[in-house]
Length: 598
Image (cartoon, rainbow, N blue to C red):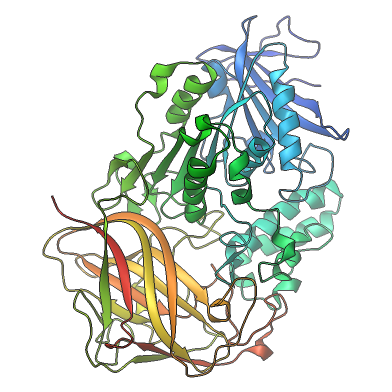
C-alpha cells in the first residue's frame, strides 16, 4: 500500500499515520489519503482502491464508489471530489473494478460486480476507522455496480444512490426495439479498450484505438460494424457479442437489473435525466423496487430525482438550451443529506421528502408528486394530418386535436446510405462523441425524407408530464425497416428543439425474441414509446411531431432487410418506400399526458 496526497495549493505534511502514508490539510478538514490499497476478493483477486478519510481517532461511516473509468478520476465531471465527502465526515473508498486500471483480474462487463461489490462493502465496513455502515454512489456503469452489489445483500450496506442506469441489458442499453445503440456502444467499446491495450503493453493497438476515437464521427458509417477499426476482440470482445445477439435470447439472461428488484433490501436515491439514454430504465428501477423490493424499508424508501440533463456533464446548460439556475448541479449537497440520513441516522437530514421530484422544462422549475406517471395528467391524442404532402417543414403537415376524416397518406423514401442525422437526443457518453441533448432540428426538417406535423401556434401554455407514445399506421415496401418519431418544441421565430424520440425496427413488431419479415404494402399499427418528459409548451410556441426512418448514429441504420447488424454491408442496402396513414380508419397520432390548467 502506498499513500500520496495533494492539497488545495498547500504541500503535504507528514504525520504519524501508517507506514509510508502522508497527510494532507485541506481548507475544510485534515484528511488522510491512502492510494492503491489492496482489497482482496473471495477468489483471491486483488482490487485496488484509494481511501480518503478524516484525520484522527474518530470512526466514520463509509461511502464506496466502484468504477471501471479510473479511480483517479472519481469525480468524472459530475460529482465533487472524494475529499469533499471525506471533509463532511465520511470514509470514502474509490475502487477500480476487476480488470480495470490498477486492479487485477479480467474485465467482463457486469459479470463480477455483484460478488466483488459485496466483498468490497464488507471489507470497507471492517476498516478500523469505519463505522460499519456503508453507502454507495455513482452513475452509469458505476450505478450498475451498486445495484448488483445490493442484490447480493451485503449485511453492512445501508443505502445506495445510483444515477442514470438502465434496467434491461438488451432493451434500452444495447438495443432499442431492435435497433442497435451504435453511438453509445461504439464509443464505450473504444474507451474501454484503451486501458486494455495499456495493460497488455500493446502501444500499437492503443495508437489505433486513439485514432479511431478521434475520428469516431466518420467511423460510425464503417461497415460491417463487427470489423470497426480500433475495436479488437482481444481487448473488448463484448461489442461483437452484442452485435451477434440482436434478439433477446439466452445470451442476455441474468444481465438485467430488473431481474433483481425482489432482492433489494436498502433505500435508494435514483437520479435520472430527461435527455439521458437510461431515462426509461432509471424510472423503471425506481418503480420496480418500490413495488417489489425485498423489504418494507426498501419499498418505502425509493426516491426519484429527474433533472433536465443528459448523460454528462451535468449543468444548467444542456445541448443548445439554458434551463436556468434551478437546473444547476447540486447533486452532492443532496447526496450528503441522503447519506447523513441513512449512515449517520440523522432523520432531520431527509425528513418529509417527496418520493418523486422532477424538473419541468419550459417553466424551468421543480414539481413533486407521489407516483409516476402523475395522476393529474390526462392522456390526450393529437392527430397527424396533411393533404398528402407533409414532407419537410415546407410541406402541409399539421398536428391537430381533431381526428382525421378521409385523407390521403404521406409518402417518403428511406435509403440507408443517406440516413437522417440524429441532432441531439438521448444518447450516451459525452456531447462531442454522440448526439445528446436539445438541438435545433431545422437542419434535418428541410429534408423530404422527414415528415413534419406542426400544431397551430399555442394561445395558452400546454403542460405535458408523463409517458409519451406515438401510434403510426404505416406500410413499407421493404421486408424490414425503422420508424422514428420525435416530439419537438417549436419556438417563436422557428427554432425547433427536440424533446423526446423513439425508434422501432419493424421486424420486431411481434416480439423482441424473434424477427419476422414485414408483408410489403401491408398497413401495420406501430406503437413507439418516446419515454417520459415534463415540459411546458409555452404560449406562442407550437408542438411538432417529426416522422422518419433513421436516427443515426444514435442507432444503426436499418438496411431494410433482415440481417445480423454486425454483418451488414452496403451491398445489403435496399430502398424502402414508407407510407404513413392518417385517416378515419388509420388515425396516426401522438398521445401526450396533458396536465389540465388550474
